[in-house]
Amino acid sequence: MNENPNREQPDSAQVFERTRARKIGNVYCDTYDDTTKKIELMKTYQPPEGMTAVDPFVAVMGKEHDGHCRLYGKGVTKTLLRKVNGGDTSSEAGKRQLAVMRKEIEEDNERKKAEMRKELEEDNERKRAEMLKEIEEEHQRQKAEMRKELEEEHQRQKAELRKELEDEHLRKKAELEAIRKDLDNKMKKFMEKIHD
Image 1 (cartoon, rainbow, N blue to C red):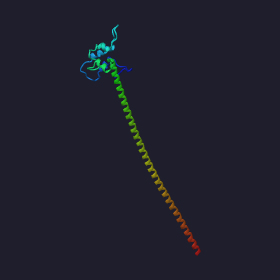
Image 2 (cartoon, rainbow, N blue to C red):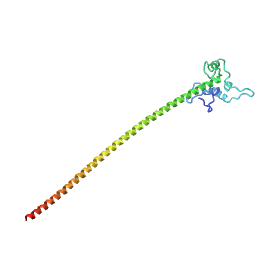
Image 3 (cartoon, helix red, strand yellow):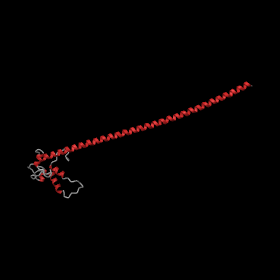
Image 4 (cartoon, rainbow, N blue to C red):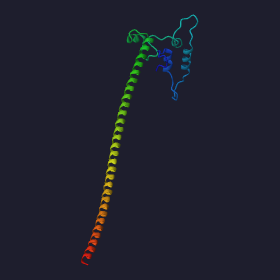
């Protein structure tokens, strides 16, 4: 991982430090004092006055032996690096390798972002479908309740109207009966007067 905020390629000293970093909580069988000392020397290295500046890693660790290229693993040589990287130096090969790694990481991040976006969209669609279904079911339930209430109200009004009509009919019938009896009485009295 490149910790440089300017995204510059790490030099050999930085690669040495990062590849030998120890995780907190892990138990190691060897001491870290010598490595810590070498890292500190690389960080504070200043070339002697009048001499050409050299890589702090080379100044502390010494020149590489023929047939070996440090920080690249067993069996890797400068000749092999030049063949693989088209004549690049070990420093350029490291930059190329880190560029490839960065590209792979960026592609992996893009893939994961696309997968996450797809999952979020599918989840949103599912939730939207569920919400629409719940709204439709609630709408149908309310319609059924309203229909039931209207039907019950209609039946109640019909029953009240029927009762009112029956009551009115009985009242009119009673009034007509009273009128008929009154007429009968009057007719009876009239006939009695005639016979007298």
